[in-house]
Length: 258
Image (tube, rainbow, N blue to C red):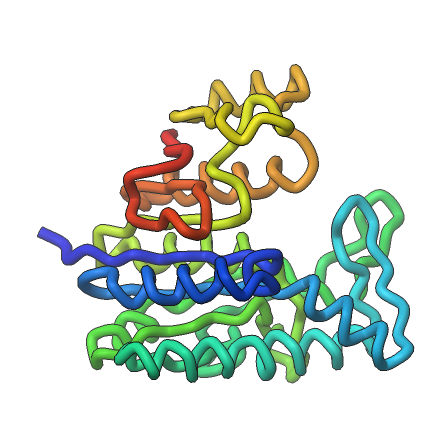
């Protein structure tokens, strides 16, 4: 029987909300057994870019990562946010280690090709995650804290969607562990009515997802989040939950089933 492992992904909006972040880190430190934290940080990157006089360009909610922006996200994701999370977890007795995909070659990607004529710049689409390397760290008593950065094996860092990092990490570790993946953000789950925080959809299957996209119930950034969640379930991840950042006990939110 596989040992349980919990992967929690925390989004950039929560990273910017000190009250939510403090509660999440406290709750994360209380999770029993093996665990991994994956973080975003887009809002902090946008703020830092503005302070440096660098314009942030977005298309359909996705960041265009030119050379200057790549320097900003590398500093913010791999440095400022990642190391602060590691330090705060150490204060809770969690032996955390901050990682980008380049560290120990844990996640390798390729530069995203042109899509509908759009050049997203230095953005990575994941090719593989090294579950064996991550498992060796976890078995040594280390809790990986993973930044949304990968590499291409040719010496280049690539900006990579944090939800995808979480999904690919969960898929890679599902060979060794009974994995629960929790996507935590500022809502209680996937909502049937975005203006009603109590309209949480308790379960979403792939058939439900197709229907919700078609009728507009699910739109925008929730579409790729659910795609990542469904792909994780299809690859053997035991359970995927989308929930509020202050409710990561696995008992709340929307459960994703294949």
